[in-house]
Amino acid sequence: MSFITVNRLWKEYGSAVVLENLNLQVKQGEFCTLVGASGCGKSTFLKMLLGQEQPSRGELNLEGQTFPGEPDRNRGIVFQRYSVFPHLTVRQNVLLGLELEQKPFLGKLFGQQRREALDKVDGMIESVGLAHAANKWPHELSGGMQQRLAIAQSFIMRPRVLLLDEPFGALDPGIRGDMHELILKLWRETGTTIFMVTHDLQEGFYLGTRLLVFDKVRNDPQQPEAYGATITYDLPIGETSRQVYQSIESSVSETARNLSA
Amino acid sequence: MRLINRHPGRASALVLGLIPFLLAILVYGMASRERLAENPNDKLLPGLEQMTSAINRMAFQEDRRSGDYLMWQDTKASLQRLAIGVGIAASLALAVGLLNGVLPVFRAGLAPLVSALSMIPPLAILPILFIVFGLGELSKVMLIVIGTAPIMMRDVAQRVRELPQEQLIKIQTLGANSWQVVTRMALPQVLPRLIDTVRLSLGPAWLFLIAAEAIASEEGLGYRIFLVRRYLAMDVILPYVLWITLLAIVIDQLLRLTNRRLFPWYNAGGH
Image: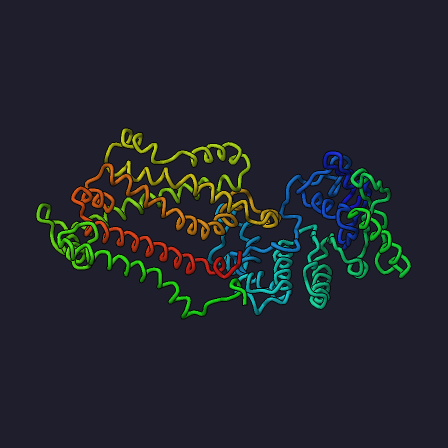
């Protein structure tokens, strides 16, 4: 049995179809990148994996069970922005998850327990390269450092699934490369199943084990919402050629043009 | 250069800021001197001399009848009412605002009521307060609470809802239950905003305090002003008004500094 199973999944908002007839099997430990034009349902799919949205039809199963209907500690998320808490320092941000888990009522750790947790936290902060900034506030960090923090904050919980919603979209290209290395390193160390939404086709081709392209197969110029998107390419990474890249690129940009027209 | 692009320097901004004050004092001084030259017993525009002697009488000499230093007694009574009233209002605002902001079920049940309450002109129900709570301290404190709490509740709820949706999702993925969402995410981030709200509410709070004191009281800054009005005692009223203004400025600045000190992340643009 596969880890995540998507079976004939549809998502509609009123008459607007966002996703149609999605089928997918994902094994534990895979690193899937989701690419496609804006409005092709990548983020909607991610929200369903998170529990923020429910499918309109079809099945979405985690180890044979229906996905929980609200976010929980087994599924971590990193958004493009606003993922960290501005009122907590770097250390406190990473510590937060451990505190919430261990102290349902107080939500804070003290004494010995706190010291033990902080050891773990410092290790995590070290491994994302923020050791020098451990006591800074998020607003004192650059965009890239904030994303490192958000990643550390999620990874320390050892989630079974980690969802990344265009996490590096707002970063400079150079920084983005460093972040790719970081996320690959953490993924290898922890074996977490990762889904990453990205706008950047290059990023999708390079990162992870599997590339999923969300695109519209059918398009009605008079009524763009009539048809939804589905997965048009499902490729293992490493076996992708220049030709495939170009054909995906042209198909995705055509859809983008249709949607914005 | 266009006027919109001309920025005054530090020194000239200070001078520009002082000019209106100096002008007001100058105009008043001239008018006062003119009237006093005509009639040394004029009460309408007292000069500096009359006002200092009035302050001296009110603040630094025992009242002949009661043996109290009236101005300090008035100040203490008024500040106490103000502090209790605003304190209760802020606590209520925090509790109701947080629940309204975080819990949709609570919001559905309570937000319309809070909105309706905030539309009631508080002074219109002052008679009800006097009838229900008597003429003592309670009715004055209640007027401040009723006058300021509903708007603060709405403001706090609004501030909670302005927190990015991403944060709410994120903390759930870290395993937070509803209680923890309130205590570890919403409350700490809304506290500095509550202080800002309190600063804005202090104006209305003073208004309600003075109105209540004017109508039924035995001491207090508002009471005194309205009492001496009968004797046209502008030499007391004007210093009292200046004193109230000064108190308001000091309280406002203290709250601002408290906010900066307690919440460094908030004031450095971390929100």
